[in-house]
Amino acid sequence: MVQPTIDVRGLWKVFGAEEPRLGAPPVEETSSAFRARTGSTIAVRDVSFEVRPGEVFVVMGLSGSGKSTLVRCLTRLVEPTFGQVLLDGEDIRAADERTLREIRRHRISMVFQHFGLLPHRRVIDNVGFGLEIRGDPRAQRLARAREMLDLVGLSGVAESYPDQLSGGMQQRVGLARALAVDPEVMLFDEPFSALDPLIRREMQNEVIRLHRVMGKTMLFITHDLAEALRLGDHILIMRDGAVVQRGAPDEIVGAPADEYVADFVRDVPRSHVLTLRWVMRPLDPGEDPGDGPAFPVTTIIRDAIGAASTSEAPIRVTEDDQVVGLVDRGRILGVIAGMEPGVG
Image 1 (tube, rainbow, N blue to C red):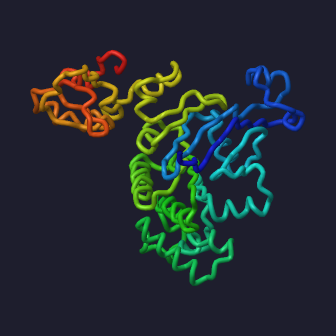
Image 2: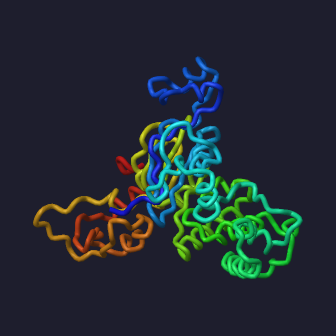
Image 3: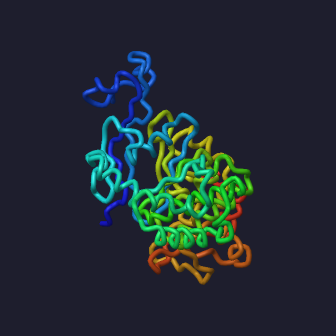
C-alpha cells in the first residue's frame, strides 16, 4: 500500500485562553457549549484525512468553517492543539525549528489569496525569492526562475515589477515562485477568490495543466463547489471546524452525507460529475451484454451521451476489461433531466 504524502490524524485547533489548560480534546462537548463555558473557540475539530502522492485534494467550506486554519496547521504556521500531521510518515508536530524551516523551504510551498509579491523587486527576483532565502547561488536561482516563468506563460515579464501586471499575471508569478523550490507538496489557500470569474477559470486551467505537467501533490482550499469539483481528485467538506463528508467528486454529488452537503450540490449538473458506475444496471449472471458501445465505469456520464444517442443497444460498462453493467438511453436521459431516483 502506498504511503500517503500527507496523513492528518485527529487534528484539533483551539484558540483562546483555555487552549494551554486542555489536557485532552473536548470530544464530549459541542463547540458552542465549549465556547460558552470557556470563551475559547474550537476552530478545527478532530479532522483526519490522507492525501496520496500526486493527487489534488480539495478542502471546501464556507467562511468560518476552519479550512484556512486547517491548512496553516499543516506547516505549523498555526500550532495545532492536538493530533498528528505526517509528511511521508514524519510527524511535523515533532519537528524542531531547524527541521521545520527545512520543510517549509524545500518540501512544502504555499500559494495564498493575497499574492505577497515584493513590489520593489522585479518579477524574476520575486520568483527566485524562496531560492534566495535558502541560499542558492544567484545565477542558479535566476535560471530556475526563468524556467518557471516560461512554465506559467510569463517569459516576457521577467524584468517587470508586480504593479505592472494584472491580477491574473500576479497570481501566475505566485505560482511560479511556489514551483521554483521544487516542493513535494503545494498548498493553495483560496488563491483565486479575489480574481474576476474569467481570470479565475483561466487560473484553474493553469493549475490543472501544471498538475499534469509536474505531477505535484496539491492541497487546495476553496469555498467554491464548482472549483472543488473541477480541481479535486478527492474533496473534504468542513462545517464549524469538523469534517462533514469526504470522497471523490462523484461521491459528494451522488451521495451527499446530509442536508448541508445536499444544499451545496443541489444545482450541480449530475451528468457533468457522476460516472457510469452511478447509473449502470449490474449485469446478471450469464446475461449477454450485447454489442453496444463500451465505456469504463469511471467515464463521466456526459462523455457517454453521444454514444447513447446513436446506439439502440445499451452501453456496456467495463471494469478491468470485464463488462460489469449496462446503461440504456432512457437512463442517460433521465440523469440529464434530473429525474432518476437517487441521482436527481
